Structure formats: structure tokens, C-alpha cells
Length: 127
Image 1 (cartoon, helix red, strand yellow):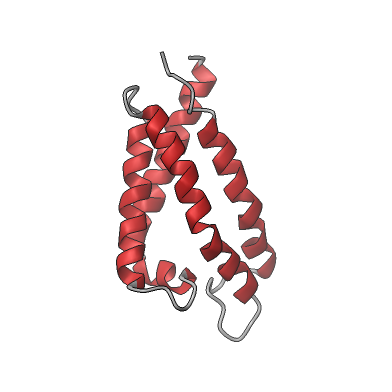
Image 2 (cartoon, one colour; image 1 turned 60 degrees about the vertical axis):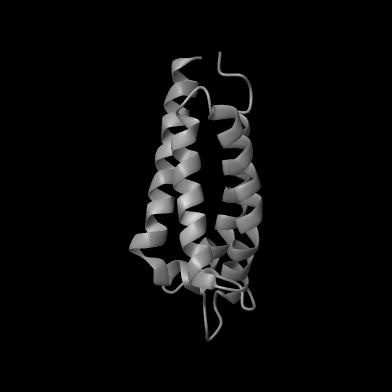
């Protein structure tokens, strides 16, 4: 594996672990992003945090890298509606992303696809 691909894998892993940890450190921020109507929103925030952090760590192990990458792609797709909710509520009286400019809320949406492509890079056999 090239040094760039290895460094990028560590970067993606760090991003996922930091994001997952954030679900526990700033739970209220993530709760605001939960679309209305989902059951047990707090538990979903915690669960998604564990999943993100765990999959980030899984990227670093050759034995689990492929599974973690595919599962990360699935997770990013699953949480996409929360980012859409955050973007569509921006600029309203009840924004899901407090203090985030409308343009930044919308800019997060294509970022999800960048993360998906980034994770896809590690779906191949690491050997």
C-alpha cells in the first residue's frame, strides 16, 4: 500500500473515531440532527457513535479493513437523511445545526459522498 493511501486511511480512521466520540461528548448537537419521528433518538445517537468509532478503528486492521470500509459506506448512507434534515432546517426558526451558516449545512451533503468514495478506497484486499 502506498504511503499516501496508508496516511489517508489513518486520516479517515481518525475522522471517524473523532466523529463517533463526538456523539458522546456533544450528544445534544447530534440529537438536533435526528429527523423527527425516529424512535429512541438518544439511543440512535449513541449507537451511531459507537458504530462510527468502531468502524474507524476497524479500518486500521488488515483483517477487518474491507468489512469496516463497506460497513462505513452503509453507515454514511444511513445517516445521510440526518444531514439532509440539518440542511433543510438551516435558516428556519428551528435549525438543527445551531450556529452553522446555511451554506455550510448544505456543503455537508456532498462531503458525505467524498467520505463514501474515501472509504471505498479500502474495500479492496489490503494484502
